[in-house]
Image (cartoon, rainbow, N blue to C red; front, top):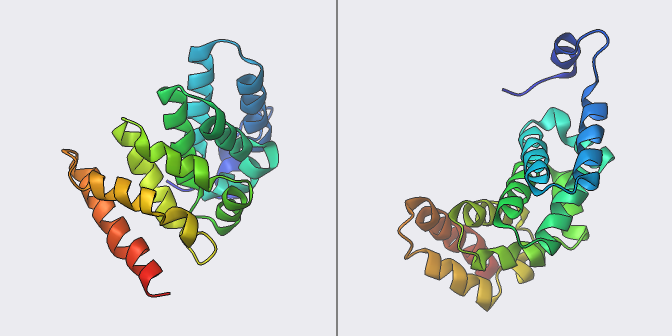
Length: 179
């Protein structure tokens, strides 16, 4: 359920930590942790906060989006990639977040995730690319390589991927042809 600031204040104990401070503490924990499982848990928690629009400004302010982008650009762990792209997918429907992802070179690493053998990552990636599709991004997300990967996904055993691939080809690629 989505929150508003009044609900957040009611749910925060009188001496409790506010949302922005809590997210900042999670960011610090992620950045300073050397334990892989701890990093995974914190990144999963950050991705969960990304579902609620009330958190978008806090997420931008404390650098969560930067962490997600760093992970998709630099990490090879499927688990970390899964949490990062899930967080990006949750955030990218907001125009400010979408613009941030685009201007901070997020498209190329996102399209690279299509080649992974992880259905959840691929599903979140396709969904994200559909949200990020506009006149500015069309050439990067409708390259022949991306289209071929999406066409290959139409043959997947995962119905979710088949449906997302079909929608992508119908909506994103057809929109590109009409421009």
